[in-house]
Image (cartoon, rainbow, N blue to C red; front, top):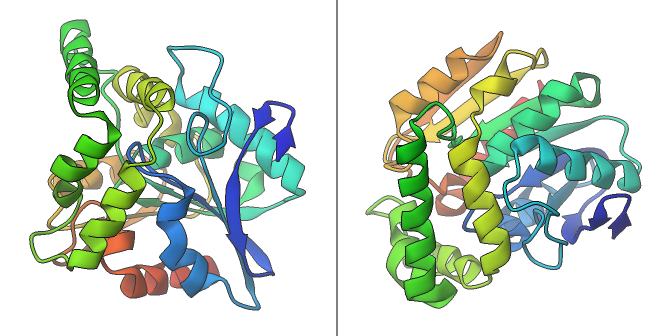
Length: 260
């Protein structure tokens, strides 16, 4: 779809109340296939985007974007879709993008749901931020998307995750585009979800798995506390990509928040 901010690719299923899904840094719209299949019914229209620089979506025009830059593209896209109000779900880095959008457009959201939210590293020292960025870029240069998928997919899940979940995470990692990944990694080290949370006055839910070693439970709890009013839920035995690891359970939780 062509928007005022450029091309955005996406997947959708169902009709009814719209639900927007934002993926994390190592993924894409396709990763939400279990939600597109499981949530899209006669009462829900489920739409998953490819963030700028992912899938067929145009990359951003800056190499040092903020979450607000992604939120601006998100706003252009939902306008092009003709959506007045919707529920917004963000996973990991997508949660940072979602919160940036929500803070600037609270009147557009019925609910904001953050799964395993990534806070960002803006409060760290310049040296730490640059080191984190360098390590990500070095790994990408050394391994490429195929190598990242081979070496990192299992880390996004619990040790007990089914093989098909690991395979699905890996499949989405293989589709990464280095330019888009580089922009997203830069945003992760330079921005902070807390900058946007205080202005989110809609119903907010933060959900994470207790086997998540990427965005651990206590860090997610702190993120939840930064909102004016947010519920916080820990799901036993699930890792970072919890919506892939146990889609039936996460779909049930999402449906509950959407209906609330």
